[in-house]
Image 1 (tube, rainbow, N blue to C red):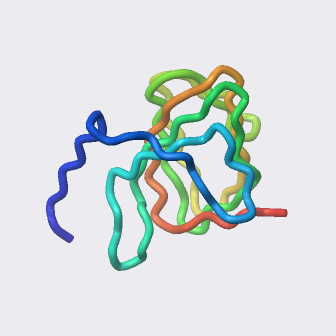
Image 2 (cartoon, one colour):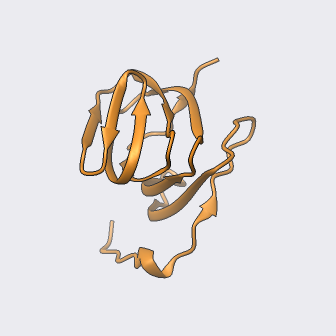
Image 3 (tube, rainbow, N blue to C red):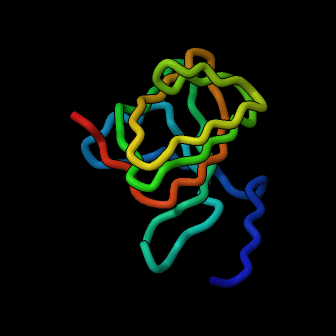
Length: 114
């Protein structure tokens, strides 16, 4: 792996598109793309007010830092400045009533639960 600088203020938000998953009102900025796994393990997500992401599992865990706004991960309410670590195998959904921006570190692709 080599050094990488991403100037996120110079990058546009893109709609999060995942086949077969409702992601209306969710936007992404990729901070780091891993060529070996062909996915971004580090990224920013922005939820519009009322946006959600379905229940899913994290095979390798997840780290989240809320930069602004508020979001609910399952039963856990997070606000600006809050950090959440989800251990490998954990599950949750996400919903933001008023909107938020978050930093994510997700080492392995999530699995959507039906």
